[in-house]
Amino acid sequence: MLTVATARRNALYCVAAFFMLSLVLGCGKEYRFIKAASFKGPRGISITFAGPVDEKWAKDQANYSINEKTDPDIYLRIAAISLRPDRLSVTITLEEDINQKATHTLAIKGIVSEGRNMGSAIVDVKKFYLGYLLSILMGAMIINNFVFTKYLGLCVFFGTSQKKSTAIGMGITFTIVMVASAMMSWFLYQFVLKPFRLDFLQIVVFIGLVSLSVQAVDTILRKVNPVLFKAFGVYLVLVIANCIIIAVPLILADNEYNAIESLMLALGAGLGFLIALFLMSSVRERIELADVPPTFKGLPIAFILGGLFALSFMGFSGMSLF
Image (cartoon, rainbow, N blue to C red; front, side, top):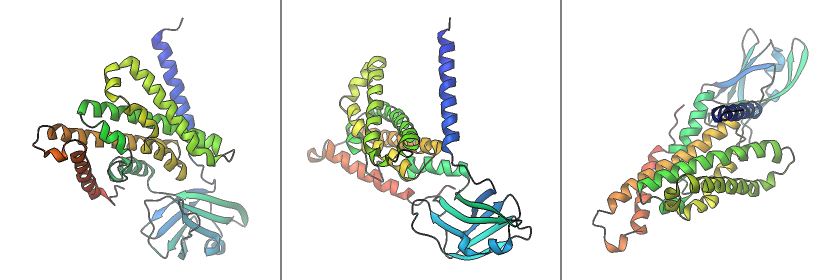
């Protein structure tokens, strides 16, 4: 018979295998004849090929088109193209500086190598991948905090930030629900909605997945920690309609994030909400002991505090880590 420990270990292996499979399937495959494509300086994009390319083809600007992935209809203008003597690398110089925070799509028409047509290619150009992932995480967590910079999720934020214990519990619960619902949303979007052209149903599907996640957390919390469950009260149910928890799946679908990028966005959004709750609850506990005018007691002073925190977080605007 299987022991409890063995069963748990097997379940953990299954989850890990599923996650790794999702990562492999979720990452876009680059074209076989292109070894690398990266930014070079403020205006350049460097392309490294697996073999030497034809010089006449390589220097023809009509063979290249570049756009930001979020703006597929706006193409960047090319100023010059240079080819290394070994003909293995091409550098495209644009007329304006590149927004290297965004992923760019590079379309290459009819690659010619040694007189043979190697076909066309579409590749993504982005910053160093680990730095890119950390940028997504830190961006959602601090730089573009969903509460203090986008003003989302304020109902739950003000309702559960009166005490630190409740705020931390709600922040952790919210992060778990956020990550679970975002990963399920990504999986359904990539493997069900997109292949069958059901993108228009994404909001309905995402809300259903969030409801499923919240119901699961509600049931588990009711059994595991009844005290914390009572402290949350109606606000746990309000997580279903929380703007943040719906916004994250919509953002990852719009930006075509793969599994690991979606995980970073969801984790960053959840931890950002936890940070916002912790900071707000810490100050509100001290405010309870302060001599606040009767007119401002309760929600009025809480809104003022929220505004001051929002002004503070504006200091992170435009910050780039990588």
